[in-house]
Amino acid sequence: MNFKWVAEMNGTMFELYFMLPEYWIYAEEGRRPGKFPPPEAILKWIQFKRLVPSSNGGKVPTTSQMVYLISRKIAEKGTKGQHLLE
Image 1: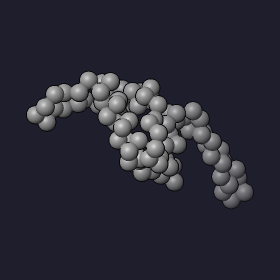
Image 2: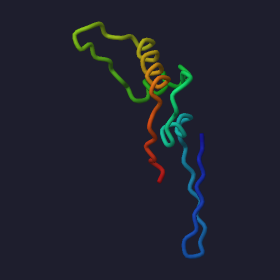
Image 3: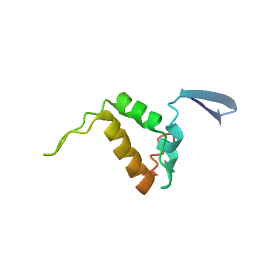
């Protein structure tokens, strides 16, 4: 997904284009608790970040289990925005 930002400086217009992943708006603004996020988006995020689960003395979760656990946490608590584009 592309994001366009336009600014004016000393009478000169600048346009910046950012190529961002589809979930950028949720990373920027956050998400309220409620519905589960799309599992495909969470899976892409896990793969992009190359997350490796750890056991902490129990079973190591599979990738699909990680998708569910992260989705459930987002559905219950929501997320806080990072405001990276400010």
